[in-house]
Length: 212
Image (cartoon, rainbow, N blue to C red; front, side):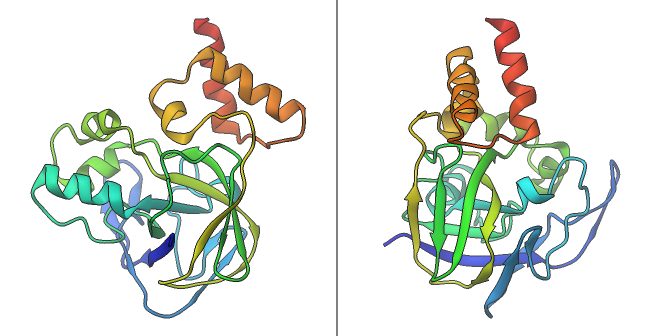
């Protein structure tokens, strides 16, 4: 069964030279937490220019991919270490299609918007030289969501994929390739009303088509 392993919110704000403070230090909370339009109750998005907002309200990372990195690095990757709000198990996060919708528990519905782009803050958080490149090369970035229907979530909640657009452009493929053909497929899907693309995806589409 696909399920939520942990729900994580900010533990403490940490000093960060590039933006002043960062809310990347997220840790699991045992009680149910409300997910609203701008994210998980009790969480903080310190840098709204690059993270957060309605189109990046919730970030999820797969337990399976965290286990890969744990083996690769020879250290534990506990829930929240990557700054994720949801640690999942049994659902294909990297293979999620942009615009795909998940129902979590009885009420919450989230819509996949984009992959996470690793930044310098993330590298300093991990303390691994070349981390951004290493994360890129593995090709499992996790996913950002917008909130379609608010509600409570907690560890153990079931995850069900309830809608998947037909364009076929997955988070993993868009993260690693951003091919012009996929850019055109996303624009066509948006024009048909099948998806609503976020601004960051539009910017990357423009770059992909400029290379064509």
